[in-house]
Image (tube, rainbow, N blue to C red; front, top):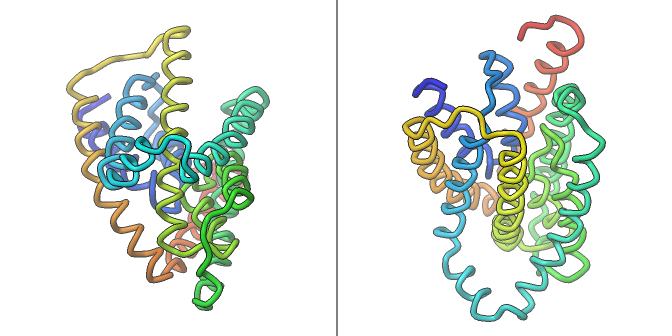
Length: 260
């Protein structure tokens, strides 16, 4: 992997991990466009660590509070959301191969476009979003997060929308989405490490990995703060329009033109 690709992939990971546009979908799309086929398992782990560190830093007070009260409601909500996510991820991991993941990409972007579009319209009714996270709501958010393992379906976007559509306050929906990303990213790293130990980590270029980490980390810090502002203002429609246009391009490429 060249240094330029490492920087671009780092920025792409940090940017799309927390915007409602699907990081996995954009990484698959980028690799297809530029013909990147090498095994980048170690690099993927490094950039995921970078986004994890960014979340912990931004929500440091929340993380410390949860650690101090490991049996408190916040921790219970996070655990309850994580359980269905892990269960769904394990099931889909056994039944969906790389070809199916790439074939689904355009449809995933389209699903994300619809979800964010509907939420953008409903967010105009501010009185609907004044509730808090509950046991039932956190479980449903966890189910949605599990379904978002499919490429093109945004994890952050779908979980924030799941909170909002259940009447959870805007800022709380966003912060809860980012907090439940911590065990998900950690779990993903464990699976990637296990797979890497079994099948090899591919090329390990420490300079490229360092560049990827730095740019993913800096971009993630900026993106999390930016996303919190978007959620607070309820201005989601541009994400929906972008995803809709992207889904059309990807579907045309997959089934008609084969541009990349």
